[in-house]
Image (tube, rainbow, N blue to C red; front, side):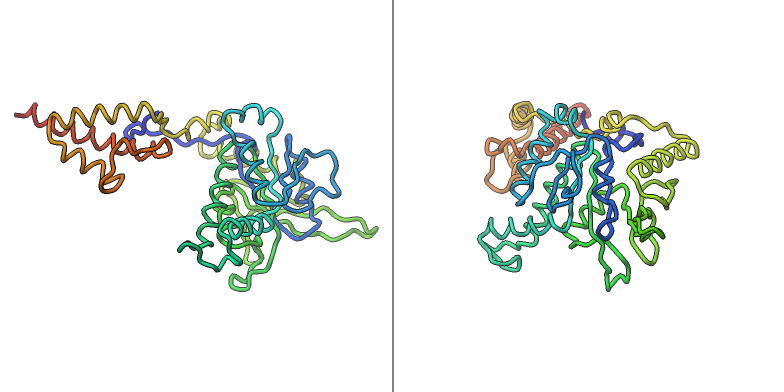
Length: 334
């Protein structure tokens, strides 16, 4: 597709859990991991030992951020993504705070630093950590799985509220990208000493943080189970269809509306070279040089572009075309 503000995509809502991002948090032994493993075709990313008492769940051990990067590369590889999705629908990221510590250690090791507060080669390691964490999480959530992030709870003294445990560079990324943040609360045990299933809250209160992007979702689940959570989401979308007069679509249809402009480096490069020559013949080489240097830097040429810079190259091409059209329109007027 080509970007055109006069012919925009129209946002749509997808049915079911596919492609949705959830954050489920609370204290220990509330069923966070167990219920997540009951979702459709799960795969467990275990930064901590969440499967010690749960059998039959596909997983690979994660003992470093490098382990996660290797697995994440396989999970999100566009060339094999359809094959992966035949095996797995739900990715369980267990748990956010532990993953952030792995990532920080990876950054320290990468730059041979003792602590995150060190500056190496003029770099702010906290910024490097933030970029690294965001890059990997962004790849995972954009692959189209149902992603369930598991988090611990802590009392935030500044907010005076129970919130997901973690720093803003990691947990902030998860919260910002979650369609639903679920807080789980213990119900203790019954008179026979049996554990009562926890309850789930999907809207914020002064006591705890929770939220949902869906306006018509039930904000309380008395007995938290994977099935009950999915039913609440499905009903919320059905209510939205009825009240707002929309038609929910499949996840595949929703994903098609979010596909970015397709850029092939060789095609864009050749078109840019051709447009440079055409513009230079009509105007001057100086104009062409100014446009190129504005995007690439002084003294740079189109031939200096690498495949990873195809987006920048496309911007150069757009500006060259705009300038060429401006000249051609003026020629017609004259």
